[in-house]
Amino acid sequence: MLTVKSLHIIFMVTWYAGLFYLPRLFVYHAMCAPDDRVGIERFKTMERKLYYGIMTPGMVLTVVFGLWLWLGYGITGGWMHAKFALVLVLLAYHVYLGKLLAAFRDDRNAHGHVFYRWINEIPALPILVAVVFLVVMKPF
Image 1 (cartoon, rainbow, N blue to C red):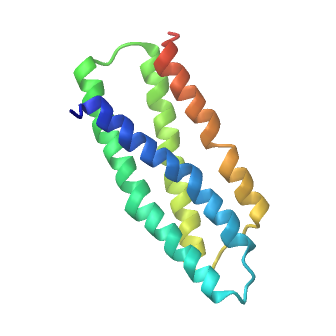
Image 2 (spheres, rainbow, N blue to C red):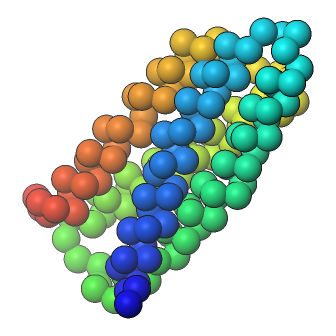
């Protein structure tokens, strides 16, 4: 039987998978030759479907079930406030990826593949580790 906690975890993993994969698609998209219209359109379709069809619903449902759990268990501990702040950072990162997606969609990409490699690795991984640490260890 699925519980609120298990649904929250399922949607959180879905959202996080998208946060890691979309910048990887941006890397490959940025590496496409300008005359490769088929490849460029394929990446646009993949990015759009990932962002709007998987990531955004995963994000919304993660927040909904997370708030449901938060209200059910109560708002206690400094670790919960730190986790909440990190979730806000993830929401901002999600919106930023949407802006990058719009630039690719409109053929206005101003960055090379190396930029997207950094975007792929740096922001999401430390936040994931920090959130898991806060939830498991509850340090304060």
